[in-house]
Amino acid sequence: MTMKTEQSSFRDRDGFIFYQDDEVYRAILPSYYEDYSLLKDSGLLHELTDKHLLVGHEECENFTDLGDIKLIKPQKIPFISYPYEWSFHQLKRAALLTLDIQLASLQRGMSLKDATAFNVQFLNGKPIFIDTLSFERYKEGEPWQAYKQFCQHFLAPLVMQVYGVDELNKIQQVYIDGLPLDLAVKALPFRSRLNLSIYPHIHLNAKYERKYKGDTKIKDKKIALSKEKLVQIINHLKVMVSSFKLPKSKTNWTDYYQEFSYNDSNIQEKKDFVREIAEALKPAAIVDSGSNTGVFSEICSPYAQQVISFDFDASVIHNQCKNIAKKKLTNILPLIVDMINPTPAIGWGNEERKSFVERLPQDAVTLSLALIHHLVLSNNLTFEKIAEFYARFSKNLVIEFVPKDDIQSQRLLVTKRDIFADYTLEHFQSVFEKYYKLIRKKELSGSKRILYHFERL
Image 1 (cartoon, rainbow, N blue to C red):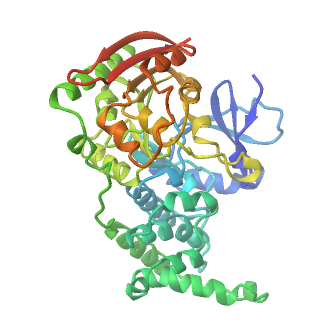
Image 2: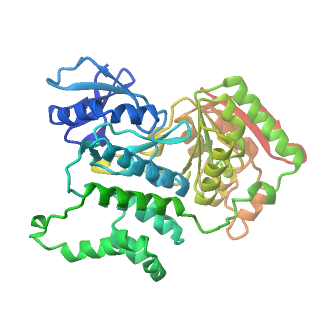
Image 3: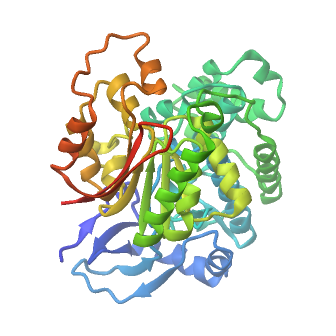
């Protein structure tokens, strides 16, 4: 099988990622040999991998025709997610991980040269650093090279959420190199300037950038900073980030199963139906689309290697993250993704960061529960579009049909004209059977809702 280079690794001048035979490898170029040796000899590599802060790897023989390179084979991450798909809870944990790694690096005579949030992934319910080439020798008196990057990728988006800035995940997609501090300052309320912890890292930092933006002599102005002072700054950032909390919020979806049209009997039938399928199939991946509070993600957790649980509502995903952390359900990955407008491919050539659908496993068991009426009646999608979409990545599909006369469907039609003459059970089933074989279906008691289990043709 031919070698395929990871498009997102082109920015690194010291190495790159590639795939061969469905395995991932990192090539290390001669320019990084000295720092790589220090990473190993200092004990930092062993410390970070032993504590599961840095992804582990094994060194390989150079089987390529790329000349003088070193090869390592990192532990594979089951699903790659991006910072603009994370909840506040996940971004905060990733920020604290980055600061902990920087502190450990300084103690071993090294420093992080990169502090981008893209260097963190989630594995077994915890954030883990994935870029083995982000470490360089610490030079006495030099400030943290990646400080500004940390502020843009972690601190600014966290602070904005603390002060109630909504829809931040969509804004983050636009700025692949991190949120500009000047933009953050404009979005933050005036009272944020009175916070003496936040002010120097966001407001003063942005002011400094504006002041020296056109100064061609700025490169000659060296900033001296002792290691002791640098450690103090990193520890201050840790304390500040640790204290961050979201303002309390509630949406129509945070109490969905308490406030909407399910009774105890049919919700249990629904849980049993999903559990039986997950237990029988025991798939590598389950994708819970429009997962809401994550009830069914949790039901599936014991039977899958990983559950990818996504919803457009940041509040429910944030609550999911807290719930699964308490219950130690480490194989569930909650993400903020809008089914109607999933994460697009962005960056250089629209290839640097892959789309959400492109990253999904191709043979997943997918859940689509209490969702189809929203997709059709609210967003004018057709059954054909929905079936084709799910068939891209779903070997098995568990989907709930919600009839038009259901109270939830009727609520969606209150403010719009009913143009959905083809929204019928017969049409739904005939369309989905173009892509799937019907395995099983079940009517929920006291309801006209029907659960289906389809298998892709």
